[in-house]
Length: 119
Image 1: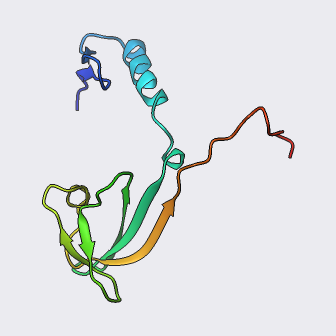
Image 2: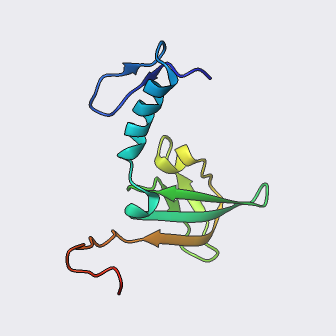
Image 3: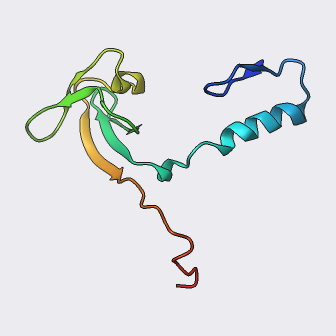
């Protein structure tokens, strides 16, 4: 696949079609540099068992709504997936069983001036 442009939110698309490697790489590095690490923001991660393949799939959400509802009894299974929702985009299907749940809270800011690094 040939890269033809780089676009940053709120900015115009920058053509890289006739640019050299160094220029294109610098644009990409600038874009990657502003992205948070996955652990820098809260998330919800579900491990789902696909009953038709017996395969476990891990799906991660960073925002609400999830776009799914689940059964009110154990084992907990996905009972509905909203068409066009985030769950739908991630490939979640009705009937998948929720096997594991992982999440993080919003990280607490660290005051770098109050904490000693040798503690």
